[in-house]
Every structure is written in C-alpha cells, then in structure tokens.
Figure 1: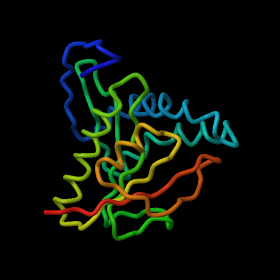
Figure 2 (figure 1 turned 45 degrees about the horizontal axis):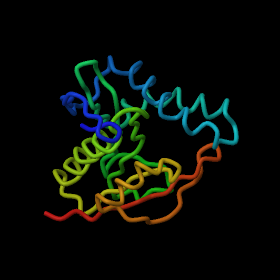
Figure 3 (figure 1 turned 180 degrees about the horizontal axis):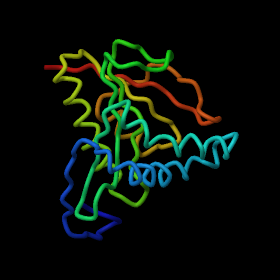
Figure 4 (figure 1 turned 60 degrees about the horizontal axis):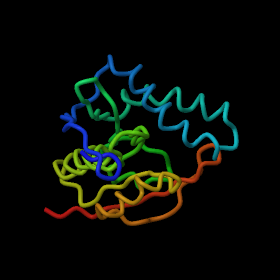
Length: 174
C-alpha cells in the first residue's frame, strides 16, 4: 500500500471475514471514528451520536463483514440480503450494502474496495441481478471508488439527521 507521494510502508495483510458477536465494541469504535467526520454536517449532533452508537447492534440484523489486519478489526460493512427487511426507501427485492465504515487514515480505497468486493460476491452467490449501496456524497473518496466499481446513482435517499444520502446500484454480470 502507498501512503502519500513516494512514501511507501510495509505491505499490510488484510483479511475480510464475517463479523462476530465479540466485535460489537470495536465496530462501535470504528463507526464513531468514521462518523465524527460527518458531525459538522448534521442538524442534531446529540441524536446523530446516539444513532451512531446503536449501529454496532445492527450486525445482529444484517451480515457484517470486517476488514482485519494484525492489529484487529479496522473497517466494517453491513450487507442486507434481498430477503431481509429494509427501510421503505429501498427496493426490497435488491440486496443492500449499508454502513460502510473505513476510518480516515487507512488506505481508504483498498479497504473500501475489498469490503465492497465481498458484498458483490455475496449478492452474486445468491443469484441477484443487481446490488445497491446507501452512501453519502460527503464521503467523496468512497463515492469516487463506488462509481469506478460500476455503481450508478439511482436516487436521493432520506437524509439522516441532516446528512444527505443517495442510493447507487450496480448490475451484476455472471
């Protein structure tokens, strides 16, 4: 991995694995780290902080995938299969990638790409013809990679505590 111009660090081994019950505190810490960058955009920081604090419990409702290095879990994504319940603003028949948390300071593109690839694999395994992702345009590096990976803007989603979100979709080929 490369960090900065001409500055190389040792190769970091990244493993993507399903989340475990014991990961809940770490997932909460990762979510808080990422969401702190969004706080200046929200309308109610107290409500937003409470919402972020509850995100780690979603791993019991969705499938969580964790990016892990030798120091432990460092990034996480939630995958919601097509048959799971979703909020009404989403197409209920399409699997959904949600709560993609890659903290600042990591190789954002590498971790994001690896987590998205496992979700795309998961959607293909189930025979889905597309997969959707719920993302905020505020996270421009993430959004750039999402579009490079073939996701296209579908529509705006309801804001969360004033933070804008959109729905993007990718057609899957076999």
